[in-house]
Image 1 (cartoon, one colour):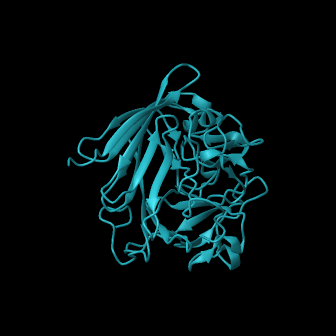
Image 2: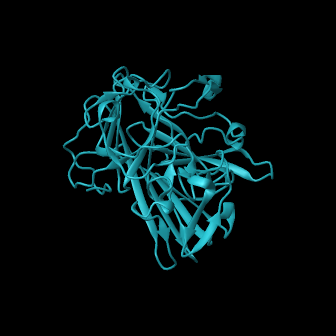
Image 3: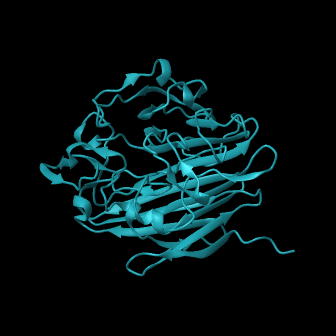
Length: 352
């Protein structure tokens, strides 16, 4: 019997303009399957077995393209040019103020209403691997951002049950860039994530105001904000905060999420300074895969990124990209069941 193909492609639908949208399926020999759509460079499915070998889809989303076109909760998509929020929908760079599209009150969220999540990307499979590179040019002035930005996101599924997401961008004039993936995970495959246990390698987090804009300096984690040891999400539901990741080179992951019921776990490693923990606070029963409603806390996101509102906080790590420089970052999600192999360093991982 010939081995199964590493990559399959099928038509997912078409945009209102009549452009075809494709869904690429990646599969490894361990039975892990991931699909990514060219619309929004969106992770649509993650099919993973539990401790008994039963496979469930652990990513929230839709079965059809049409709901993605409505730009709802950003299920699985690539967000940019600037992930998270920019207060007042404006920033100043080299003495010039740029005004951005508003889509969350007076602020700009995830690149604005016409950000990367709402764009059609081109795609090319990577020969000899379960990998696809998605790419597009964001033209000067798109959503108010300066510079023509050539951006790519490569999704690779490895034999170690890793989903590697590699971002790259370059510009022809000074601009700002902050990219992430917005997959909502539910390791049980259904129900709420309140019983999921999370560990974060972070001693500090960013307090925010009522509009979720950082107040300024980070603060030490304490009480229910402390995930340095495993803590159930349900201990204090309603997280939407950036955690400042510790940059120490050893074998431990930056985050570990586990579901005691199914035995599934994921480990996350990144080279980014922060991770936004979002627990699906604004999900309102929107119907997803199989017509199933997604209520509040039906999934959670681990959005690796630079800090929100960075252009207006000079003490935050810079998000400025200039001509001649290349923006590069990578995040790795590793999936498994039982006890995670915390002492095993992931080959080529961002913090190895």
